[in-house]
Length: 178
Image (tube, rainbow, N blue to C red; front, side, top):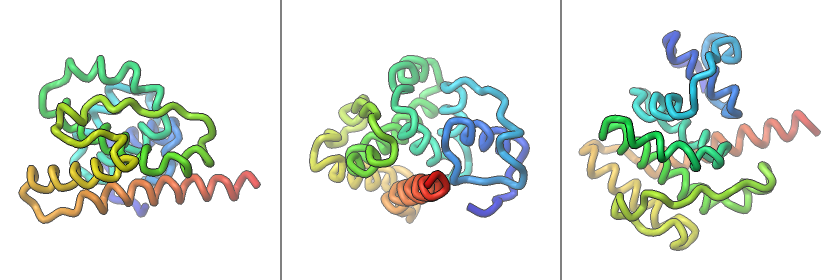
């Protein structure tokens, strides 16, 4: 992704993303120089509340690369303000649906990874992640978020773009290591 005139704060988030395996976003500087060791909970909440959609949606990729975070993050997120909790739950649920939908292909690149548990679909009044491998839920989530925002945004396309970016990154990294 081209530089978006990221702030120094954004550059530090990009550095954290880089350190945790999300390499498809880039800033003006080498992101690795800006990682500050932000705790996963703080990183997740800062990404979830970021004003730029690409940065917010990078939380989806981060969760796909680190499904093991699903053990602690949900317990720690309950201490955040309600709006942050909701944003995290929506993006987490998008990651769950996308992981189910792309499970076979993700495993080809990532090997043996754990599935993200479907923690929030019922709470958000959405279909189970198991229904049609997450497809029904992903569409319902996108529709729900579009209605909630009141804006003519295509959330489904945004979620699918995350997967294009993830697979583009994984394919590029595979070619480098061949």
